[in-house]
Amino acid sequence: MDRVLNVFACLVIPTVAVMTFSVHAEEPAAKLLNLPLVFRDDFETGDPAARWEASDPKAWKSIDQNGNKVWSQFQHIVTKTPVRSPFNRSVAKDVVVGSCVLDVKLQSTARDYPHRSLCLFFGYQDPAHMYYVHLGQKTDDHANQIFIVNNEPRLKISTKTTEGTKWDNEWHHVRVIRDVDSGKIEVFFDNMTEPVMTAVDKTFRWGQVGIGSFDDTGNFDNVLIYGTKVERPAAKE
Image 1 (cartoon, helix red, strand yellow):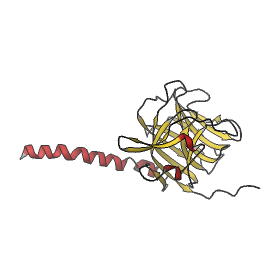
Image 2 (cartoon, helix red, strand yellow; image 1 turned 180 degrees about the vertical axis):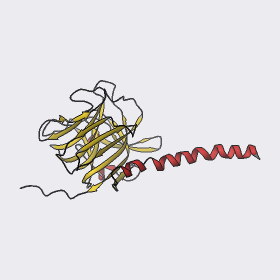
Image 3 (spheres, helix red, strand yellow; image 1 turned 90 degrees about the horizontal axis):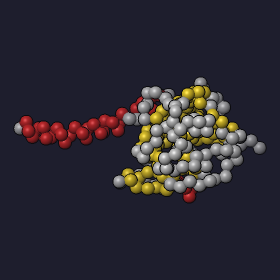
Image 4 (cartoon, helix red, strand yellow; image 1 turned 30 degrees about the horizontal axis):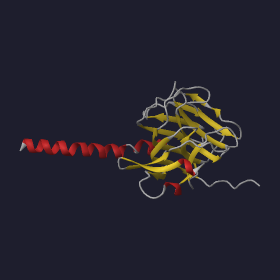
C-alpha cells in the first residue's frame, strides 16, 4: 500500500505545483496598484490582428511553439515615424489607460549583438507621443533605458538601469508599473521584487500599451494589462 501511495504522490504533486504557480503568478501584479484586469491575451484563440494595432501588420504573425500559440514579431520592417522612435510596435486596440501594470512573457529571436533588444510601450498616444522601455543587451544612451517620445527624437528618462539585459533564446517575464499621479515608472525583468529600471515623469497621463522592438525580432505571450480605463481626449482641431 505504501508503494502505491508513493507512486500516486509522484503523479499528483507535480500537477498541483504547476497549477499553484499558474494561479499565484498573476496575484502580485493585480495587487500592486489595486487595478482591475482590463486586457488579457494568450493568443490561443481568434486572430490576434483583430486585437492588436501594429505599425506594420506585415511584421507580425501567430506561430505555434510545441502546441502553444504566441504572437511573433517575426521580421524587422522600417516603418515611417514622425521622429526617431521604435519601428516595430503593436498596441492593444481600444484599451486606453492611465495608471497601469503590464505583465508579459517575451522571447528575443534576434542575433546576439550589443543592441539586441525588445521594447514595451505605455502611455502611447500616437506615433510621436509615448513612453517605451528598451531592453537592450548593452546599456548606452540609446539602449537599455526608459524613453519618452514627445514630438522629438526619443530621450532617455531613466533614473536607474543596469549594465544590460542578458538576452538568450529563452522566455522571460517582464513587468512595467506606471503610476500617473506620482509619475513613477518601474521595470522588472524575471525578478519581480527588484526593478532593473526606474524613472519619474508626468508628461503623459493616459495612453495605450504595447509590445514590439526597435529593429529586432521577438515573440510575445500571456499579455496582462491592469489599469484605470480612461476616455481618449478628443483631438484638437
